[in-house]
Amino acid sequence: MTGPPPPRAWADKDPAAAARLSAARAGVSALAERLNMPQENVISPDTVRRICWEPPKAVDPGSVERALAGFGARPWQVELVTPVLVDALTAKAA
Image (cartoon, rainbow, N blue to C red; front, side, top):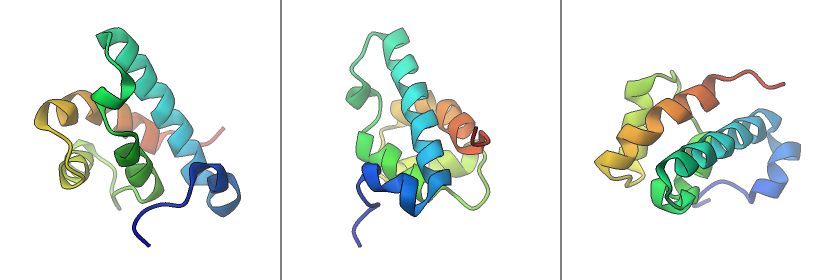
């Protein structure tokens, strides 16, 4: 498999991943709005899906930074998005 399944299937396949993706999308959307930038310029939607489907074993700023860099995010994107994704990946599902 070259990546995660389509997001519409996540709720059935992995509800926790679906919750992470929802939180991450909301956080990235809010960040993009504050920066007055399109969301896809802040961080690639594919990168967000990949990290939400398979988050680092231990979620912390360093592990998220490394994962983002590994997916090809630019340094400025990593700096901006890491706190948002750490929050999303560590939030408990409602």
